[in-house]
Length: 266
Ligand SMILES: NC(=O)c1ccc[n+]([C@@H]2O[C@H](COP(=O)([O-])OP(=O)(O)OC[C@H]3O[C@@H](n4cnc5c(N)ncnc54)[C@H](OP(=O)(O)O)[C@@H]3O)[C@@H](O)[C@H]2O)c1
Image (tube, rainbow, N blue to C red; front, side, top):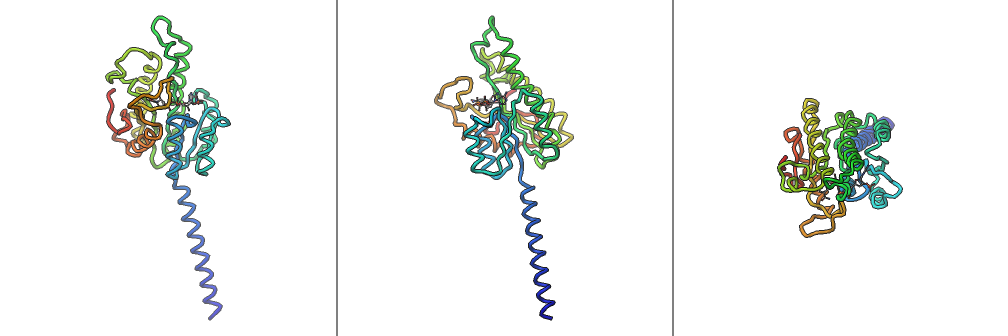
């Protein structure tokens, strides 16, 4: 009798240990995943930090991981952060990374990397068309190619979101879009808007939300812009952008939302 009860206690203990382990492993599996481009500095770095601190699996990509010291510091503090090399203009690198993550759900695919291009080379009469190709390659071709490469990962996830960081500079009817200058940057963001809109329409039936977020006027020295009154910090921007992404859903798919979640002019 004593033997029987001790066998029963042992079995109960084993079962509860197994159930506990299963619960723990399903918790690990259940953590959401975000892939961010250009996460070594600026807004991308702070987006990586925000997601890392809330316990998401962060695939933090950048062109030169060995020099990404700030990102390395985040990864050293959070073992849910994996740094991956990715130049968004390198189709082979994109394909190789997609192969590496084949079968792994990605809840939020976050295309953040972009370049403004030297403004002096964007003046009518002396436009530098080699630079134009480069700006389009980073700001439009990159996000589209990355969306194509990782679409199965996004579709396999719970949240199913592709978010492209853009700018009201690319909007025909916004105040900043209606000032002269920056032919390349502005037209690249306009193109990104249309690319996003088309994807949002085509992906809706698959339950995938595709949206644009404008991160605000952020003190990152983007395009050599010095710190100015009215700018927000990259940390403030990232916190707000993540909240907007949290609220993004299929009904909002295809919109350009500000970092405050307001619908921006197209
Ligand atoms: N700052 C603003 O006020 C503002 C306003 C509106 C929209 N935005 C948008 O916000 C996003 C982030 O801008 P930010 O202000 O954080 O700029 P940033 O500080 O200049 O950061 C740009 C990031 O893009 C990366 N990048 C550039 N070319 C790349 C490539 N070929 N492959 C991979 N990564 C590349 C950079 O990496 P490297 O270090 O390797 O160059 C860097 O990590 C951009 O989409 C930008 O258009 C910014």
